[in-house]
Image 1 (spheres, rainbow, N blue to C red):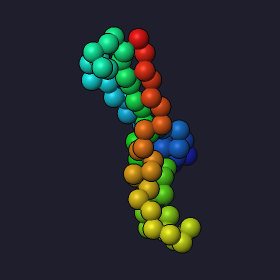
Image 2: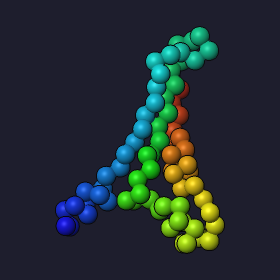
Image 3: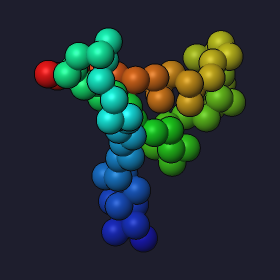
Length: 72
């Protein structure tokens, strides 16, 4: 049980997006990365409302892109 708990607590899911196209017809590439929502490690909407007293779409906030990489 402890090993399973360690696995759940230490697991993070990331999403990386890149469409292999250029930006504005130049050789710039754009990537974005975000954390994927996991109810095991994030609050559910109901838990958030109970804890903080306001309704919130937790998944929407968690999965909002946090890192943009623009490279040439």
